[in-house]
Length: 88
Image 1: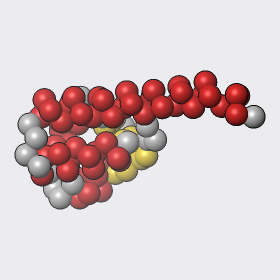
Image 2 (image 1 turned 180 degrees about the vertical axis):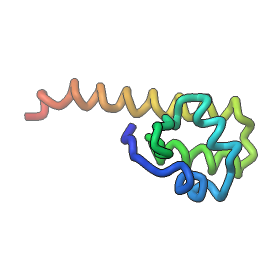
Image 3 (image 1 turned 135 degrees about the horizontal axis):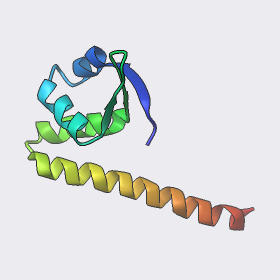
């Protein structure tokens, strides 16, 4: 996950003013709200969630898909670390 800082308002604009989506992502820890009206977020996860919502995937499905995306990315990083030294 690559975290990026956004203002809360800019993030809402990126998801076409879908405040409910942002609220759900904050609840699930995908978005970390900071004190200064800024958020720390993996924007790819937010955009994936928005796309899944547009495809009418229910929230439990979105949460599972986002979790699996994170787990897959972590597994790929671990594999790359294990394979890295052998390739040199």
